[in-house]
Length: 558
Image (cartoon, rainbow, N blue to C red; front, side, top):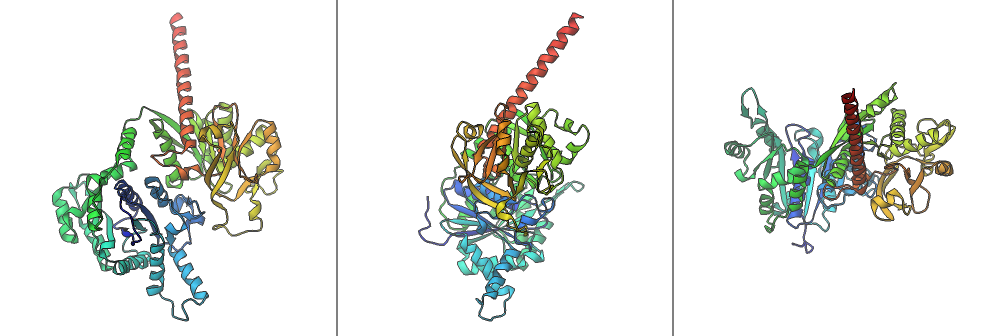
């Protein structure tokens, strides 16, 4: 194991070209996993070129999930990849947007820190970006920095200029440029085409950056003659043209890149010692993924199911829960509004488990209540998360406690029974961005509760993102009718977990456990939920088999 000994870390910059969504975040996270496999300490940063200060107020349909860090930052979903693939714990210092950079510079100008100078993109914006780069480099050997967007976009230019300057600041041996590009296969011609890669590298070189390594995204084997051609026209070493092939699971990417030798090349170019690579855990994981013992089907009732990236961490956390038991997890996406139609609940037939995830607003709320009701009455394992917690408790208040008109003030401010209402700390706060209960908070679990047994501890720390809370005035009513409040904040102010004793498995949580799940360390709530779903599946199939056998016997008798 190497130690920094006070020396500056190495920086790896990951850029992308040709088209968006090539997988820069996954590539960076996978490289981070490989470097950790060599014994090096790493961290990862994301720079996003959009002008929003953060993604907190952006539509899930446009941006996807908002990932929340321990310190309460609302960030890009790629930070979820970073934490799932490596041991890094990201913070607000690990995600910067153009808006956030400019906001900081303008605040400095207003305070007079530039001493009356004209504030310009160069050097003030680029210097600010470089300060952010240095802030992430404490106590690590390598910082991996992903530049969002696509090379050639005007929005990315200040970030590209900053990382160009950064090599001059810290030295060539301390920086590495990795460019992710596309090598498409044209079926009609029967050929792999290198021109998109050549043009992308040309655009990058026009910014003064010569890539050291090319990750060539492709759906098939990349012949050596193609690698040779790319190396020649892009002025990189042939060994540094790396095939980044499509794989069946994202958790194969580290092994796929290792097979191409990218980790050894990185260590060589950064002049770091070539240590032994240990990826045995990833190998065992991939074997488990490829050879599941059985499967389970989870119905997810959400508001943004048309765009699965809206639930990226949730998807992965459920898959992780399957890993814990050698099970393949199948998803049945159900639009919450569809459950509000007549006979809409039939969409939940055959569910091994029902999950209602987070969300905001009024649309689909009655469908989410219906999902909770179906799970409760049919004895189907249920997990409600954040918004799912709120509507599960409202459903219980209405249909079990008999509190007619029970609702959330997010939907009906004049509700007869305000079971869910706006956080008391946010009364009078109208701004939407960064004003919720955000970040990691402690939760105390009731001894002997299902939550207590699932976690195996009395205290947990989970990440939150919500503007409304359970009204504790209704605790006596729901408790009297059988709903157990099994998780609370240490001061008792916030209700964090509710569950149904006597039900096979019914838990609703105000926080977002999906942000703490990793493929090599599945979150206990998802592992428990998937296990309960599989038990339900076995019982359901066994009962169906018994009915079929009985019907066969009856028919034979006739």
